[in-house]
Amino acid sequence: MSTSATAANPLFAGAGTLFYKEVLRFWKVGFQTVAAPVLTAVLYLMIFGHVLSDHVKVYDDVGYTSFLIPGLVMMSVLQNAFANSSSSLIQSKITGNLVFLLVSPLSHWAWFVAYVGASLVRGVVVGFGVFAVTVWFAPLQMAEPWWALTFAVLGAAMMGSLGLIAGLWADKFDQMAAFQNFIIMPMTFLSGVFYSVHSLPGIWQQVSHLNPFFYMIDGFRRGFFGVSDVSPWMSLGVVSASFLVIAAIALRLLASGYKLRH
Image (cartoon, rainbow, N blue to C red; front, side, top):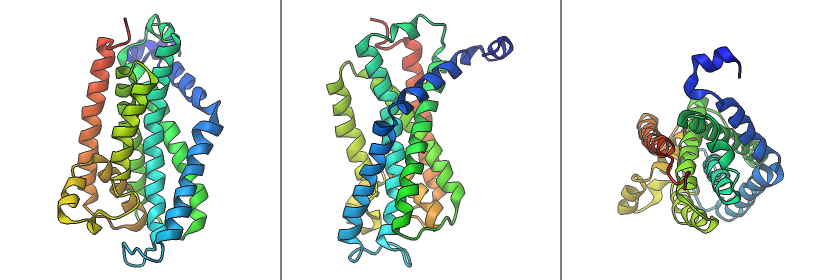
């Protein structure tokens, strides 16, 4: 980073280098971090699409397989954005190489921008890979693409921030696995990826509306079909507010050095 750029943005000094390091970290093992999630999404599509395509009708003129694809794309974006920042931090803490970051003059803003930025890149890359492979299975349209882009970016940034919190909190891989298996996975699978919440009984519809993941999935799907279970503006408000709260918590933990300096 140039001297002038560093002087103009002291809070973000070094963020570009750390961001490059984080992107390179997951890209070097792309078969595991990119190709494997794409394969998993294709398997979901083949199984659920084959079993339910003739039995489930969600929107008029939209087949179940077509309905399923955007949900799988967004699920992949969210899960991989979370995995990127959380796995990077926990690995650095356990292997001990986090000390090299701690002795560098990086502000908490630089940490946040680099880790969340890299998470966003991984989430979007995996999501694009899932879309590129699954789009051949069913016809799709992009009725309102700006909604799809908005929720993909905002959702990935939110999950990257949440991954930061999880990575800071966890001291070992077991704790990280528990966070992902008992919080991230249930909230993702119960967000309407495989079904419309309108098909649920009344009480479960209300419960689903308490899940911020539902609004990310529903808003993203709006970009493809031009219809959604709730207003995309409501979804945007919920997701934006959730991101701001999670980002503020992550920044506060980074600023305080929570579980970074023992």
